[in-house]
Each structure stands twice: as C-alpha cells, then as structure tokens.
Image (spheres, rainbow, N blue to C red):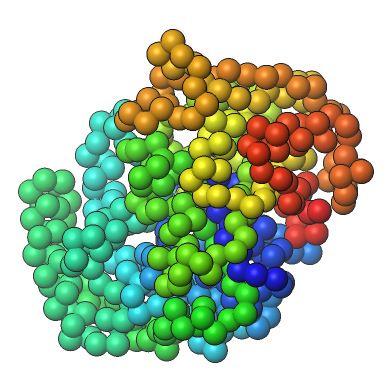
Length: 420
Ligand code: GDP
Ligand code: IMO
Ligand code: MG
C-alpha cells in the first residue's frame, strides 16, 4: 500500500470519517492536515457510533499513529475532552501514539468569542453560518503572524506574552465594535495553562513521523467547495481543503502523495449558508434528509439536501486529481422513483460544465438535470456490485462516465463493514 489522501468533494459530511476508519487498518499513521473541530467525522464499528472532531479517524485501530499536522487549528480544550472520552472507552490515547505538531496553531478562547461576535454582527443574509468554533479568527492570527502555536505550550512566559499582545487588539474590537465583553489576559492564561501543560507531552515533529512511516493516510476535513480559495466564497471555511494542502499542512512533499480518494455522497448536502444549486426544499429534499439522518455531527443543525451535482464534482476532480471515488450513502436513495443528476448549469444564457468563478455566481445558475430510474430494494446488505439492482449500477456508472474517475469503493450503510 502507498500513501493515500482522503478528501471531501462536496460541502463536507460526505462520510470521510467512515472511509478513513476503514482504510486505517492498512496504514501506519493517520494525519489531519487542515481544519479543526469544525469537523465532525462519524465512525460506526460493531453498531457503536463514535464522532471525532480533532483526533484522526484511525484512532480506533490499536497501535496506529495519530498525527495532528501544522495546517490544523487545534482547540486544546476540545482535544483534551476527546482524549478523555476515548480513554474512557479503553482506547489508547497516550503520547506513544498521538502527536501534535509544534507548528499547529491553537484556537484560544478569544477566537471563539470573536467568531460569535462577527457572526452576530452580520445581517441575516450575510451570515456564513459558521460552526462557531473560532476557526476563522484562529487562521486570521496565523496569517497575521501573531498566532499561538502548540510549541509555545512548552514556554509559559512566551505563551503569556502572546496572550497579552493578542488581547490588546482584540479587546478594542470586542468592546468598541461588537458590544462584547473584554477578556482579561491573566484569566485567559490561567484558563489555558493546565491544558497547555497536559498537551506538552504530545508535542512532536510530525514531518519526521510521516517520513518514518511506511504508509500514511491523510484525512481531509470539510469539502472542496468550502475551500477558502476554490469554494463558494465567502460562504466557505478558512482553510484550503483541496488535496494539495495535504502536503503543506502536514509537512511532506507532494511527491509522497500516491493515491487520492474523493469521498462523494450519492446526493448533495450542505450545512450553513451559501449557494446550493441542486437544493431541494420540497418532498425530495425532505426524503433525503430523513432517510439519510442529515443532521450536522458538530452543531446538530439540519443539513440542507438536494440532488447530486456533477458540476461540483467535475470541479473537485480538476482541483484534487482523484485516482478513485468512494461513493457513500447510496442506500439512502433506495425508494425514490426517479433520481436526478445535475450535469451542467445554465448561466447567463450559456451552458457551463464548471462553476462560474465570480463571487456568489453559483446562486444564479440553473441546474440542467438528467433523470434516471430509481430502485426500491434495500441495498444495505450488498457487498458487491453484483448484489446491486441494475438501476443503482447504472447510476454509479453514469457518475464514473461524467467525472472520468473510476469508483473504488461503494458504501451502503454507516457501519465499517457496509462497504465494498
Ligand atoms: P464526514 O464529516 O465526511 O466524516 O461525514 P459525517 O460523519 O459528518 O456525516 C456522514 C454521516 O453519514 C454519518 O452519520 C455516518 O455515520 C453516515 N454514513 C456514512 N456512510 C454511510 C452510508 O453509506 N450509508 C448511510 N446510511 N450512512 C452513512
Ligand atoms: P466535516 O469535516 C460541513 C461549514 C459551516 C459553515 C462554513 C464555515 O465534518 O465535513 P467554519 O466554522 O469552518 O468557519 O464554518 O463551513 N463547515 C462544515 N460543513 N462539514 C464540515 O466538516 C464543516 N466544517 C465547516 O457549516 O457553513
Ligand atoms: Mg462531518
């Protein structure tokens, strides 16, 4: 086996966690390279559900190394909570197998307050609908070169000085612009110090750990159309979610990325605001939402649902270079008489095959649909292509045809074993 990148091809929640958990069996190390606890990755093993926000989705396989790359933004309180929850289930979360890069940026309590303040100051149609986890403000500080990095946890004096400096500016914004309360630097320092001390044991050199591992699984978070550059800006997250960032976000060369697997939900969902051309607000959307239990794994919000958008997937293929697709939640489509596939958009009187690039243009396209017959059979027990109804096979083949990428995996239920 070689190194594999797993990424979300739509707007997140495609089922990345499930596929990473499945592939982790054959990997030595699993690394997160971007995003933070805005992610919610669900694994189901022997009927038991486990939702991970920061710790890589390979953690349930004993002995596999779990690495947090430099491109991640890490909330130390959430990380500790996650360690404790897993430890209570008997999972080994000791520093012998878990590592945080010293270069990883830390989400501080003032980032969460800033995220909430910025969102509530926006007008209803301007709200991004962030997860409120402080992701954007933390990446802002990173780019502004005033962020706190995990390595600073080993130096309390530096940590304190950075908190003082950060709050000088942020408190002006809190009190003068956002009618929020100022934060006391000493109190923030005292709040963070215990977790900082605890996490010092996990600090390491992730680049070297990757270099020394035979096979590494790179676990993407969010989805391509939430990418800060290539997504539906400004309704996006604050990191590059595309596969090129797997290398820079973890500290290895792009040449070490061998296989690239696009996770594709068999229909489309989106949480939060922003354009969604194939969204169905009527009975079909309702059907997908209920059958697919489409509620956010991080915020519990209802996910918006609609038909599979192949314009979105074509763009994902060109940006990420997938070697295979993993189609998830195919079982959710069972019971629909007809299934629609969006193959192009009408935009300004023309038919386009890729998303137009002007800001918010995706809000003004009209999807062009192809309609395919559905199937009634329950397919959750299928373990090979032969066990799928013909209509389901035809649907999958059409996806391969239009994206030009072969399907490597099909998932027909949430459990680790419901895959072929
Ligand atoms: P991620 O963020 O990409 O890891 O995806 P989430 O965990 O947020 O959302 C995917 C949801 O779909 C989770 O509840 C999974 O347990 C569930 N799931 C994954 N694959 C399948 C599948 O093939 N069929 C069904 N019915 N559920 C699935
Ligand atoms: P996983 O890894 C789905 C969305 C939020 C919001 C936008 C910006 O589970 O697929 P942020 O808090 O990142 O500033 O919010 O991005 N978002 C996600 N949507 N899945 C996710 O992660 C997401 N992470 C962020 O809903 O619209
Ligand atoms: Mg999710």
